[in-house]
Amino acid sequence: MRGLQAEGGTPLGRPRGRLLAILTSLAVVVYAADLISKTIVLRTLEGKAPLVVLQDVLQFRVIFNSGAAFSIGTGMTFVFTFIAAGVVVAIVRTARKLHSLPWAITLGLLLGGALGNLTDRLLRQPSGFGRSTQLQGHVVDFIEVLPGHFPVIDYFPVFNVADSAIVCGGILAVLLAWRNVQIDGTRETEHTEETAAGTTAETGKEPKDG
Image: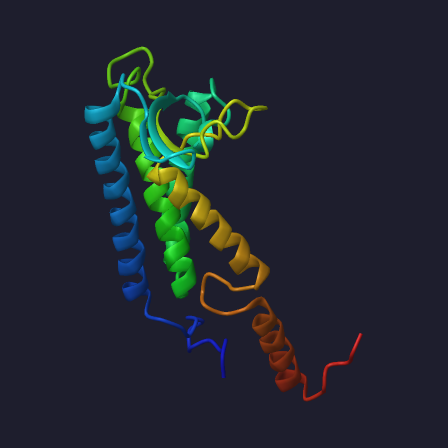
């Protein structure tokens, strides 16, 4: 039966070791893609005019963001550094219960994205070890979609690979929560049915409706 637990309380599902490998591999890919893309655009586009990829649709323009993803909350760099570090710690702790492939993908995206932006906050200007602005580095953003089509806010927020991974991971997390998919590979309804079945087995009576 789906959702049953193995002896000793270990959830039946995909092997945790394999899922951790998937989570780690995806996080490394996201982190590497974010770091490499930022390095390339800084060397080729910093201080220069935007590079138009698709006219009026997509262009690359380097900015240094002191806020959160999509340039939200500028001026709160110190706070967002600790938030990013907390997210990384929370993901690592949560992964100990991992028995779900969708959650492995979700956590991999979130971890890679969080590490990418956290690296900027720790190491990029004006931050750096030994400086008074430590933990206040600005994140490199460069992807701009539909430039000039949002006159009220001047431009659509510029973002990077890490931001994209965080947003995709967040959307997946919401969908999994909406479908009641648990981190251990079971569903919330299955937990309820197991509890009811266990009560019936212990008492010998059928659970009453209502």
